Length: 300
Image (cartoon, rainbow, N blue to C red; front, side, top):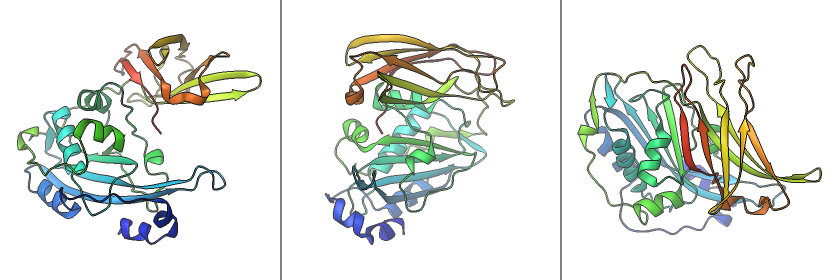
């Protein structure tokens, strides 16, 4: 329904170039195959068109995302998270309703693992260390005609089509059986949230300064208190270390402290943000897992 509604609009017809290909499975077939796996309560697969109007018509873009929403039985849990991610990613990449993906592949997992499970680590093991996982539906679904409504039981793992193609090969993937051993009996265990996540990088020019800003979100513990520690970020421009900066935390600040750092200089590559990446280090603290991640980029 989303696809039909979106393709009816002239914007998508004019700007989206379809590259159909044989193989894969229809979204209905993907959903039915997953629902046949013991422990998967429901699976909803579909293609979702999107249109970004840009700024006053400039830099507008459009495309079609692949979406796979898997609901796990509440009395089951994911036994192998990285294996589960790869298997569901392969299933999503096999969706072929006649429209080639252009944009992102959005996996939504309901239950199965604690909400604060470290999906970024799983994505790094499956897709490589230089991937940036989005878990923010307001970004992933920003240009959808009908934005899915997520609950606290849902986790979004959103990655670019280019990342999928690099790891899983050309779209569509061949249909593959889902290993039932990836799920096991019993509800998932609670885990502490990572200290920080949702990283974003931007170039800033103004006020006589040229800067690269690296921002992040300080997560909340079980009592709703944000991570209070210092966050150290090292910026790299391609293979060269550009500099290191610290976002200071504060145990007494309701916001937990600073949530970004800036690297300023005449040689800051604001017009080439795609060439920069960061290492982010945030030590563990009571109620929080430590974070030590390299290859942090922003591929939006």
